[in-house]
Length: 178
Image (cartoon, rainbow, N blue to C red; front, top):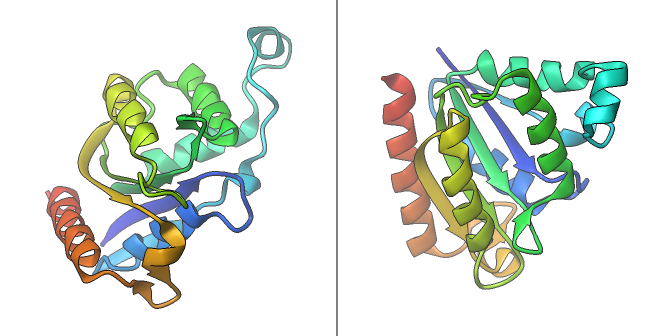
């Protein structure tokens, strides 16, 4: 059975990106899903002086171990000022100090959502440009615009968006099944 990790690239306790990641991951069949929360992996702000004095924090290694022990990654990125949320960027920086290819070529369903109509499109483009240099194997992607208008506890309200997500999940599933 495949093991997939799912998480939102935000430390918000009510992260809409975590909600989207969990929703998408729960669409997978015959798969063990582990939901991660960035709040469970608190880290000091990355800096070379800190690293030289104290080394790599344990939580960075623990999160990287979760990535490396999975067959797939479902990640939905929060967009803050057109880029990654600070909590995610900090985790990303720490993990890259352990392994420059931190994503380890593990198939990834990369997503984003936001309250606005662009659905985190800018952060998706940033990640699609950067992650492949870091071992990112983005096999599927999805952007959900206007989160509160298009998402409910039951899932996606818009059937066209649900169809698009379902197609991306099928592509992701094919990739993790090899």
